Length: 207
Image 1 (cartoon, rainbow, N blue to C red):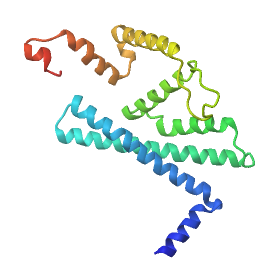
Image 2 (image 1 turned 180 degrees about the horizontal axis):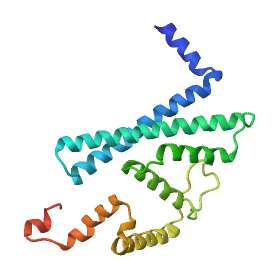
Image 3 (image 1 turned 90 degrees about the vertical axis):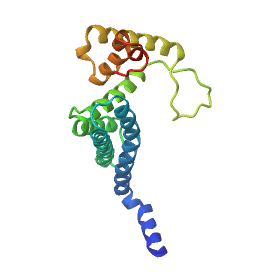
């Protein structure tokens, strides 16, 4: 058994098979990360705000977790595969545009279908892209080169105010243009607060 383990270790560490094992590990990491992210989120949101029987809720949680996990697995492996192909077409040297091209193709193939899970992932990523345009905070000279730099506090202050001003105006005046999950949450938070017909309904009723 030890001999087999040693042989497999040598195979995994062989540079000739590095790209192959990169694809396998990317797929594995995508599947694991997708499940870790989606399962607790779907569990909490479904049992707190979802409708249907406990069995139906459980089926939805499993379906959403499987979809998130499988899509991230597909995207991670496809993205790394395209990067490898693009790098090999350039004599083994990566170009800055390789990640953009691989991301476009992967995003179109994997996340192009509009489902609730895909929409959430794309909107989450879009928000991170937009926030990356904000000025960064000043950091010390020895700040780690690859560590993300925090957003400048004053810029974030203005950004937060504008985002909430816009989203609340859209909710009150153009709600048909907002994502369904956001509208449902805001209905509960703000419109539901204006309606009650008993003391119990005022403080304890959730719908």
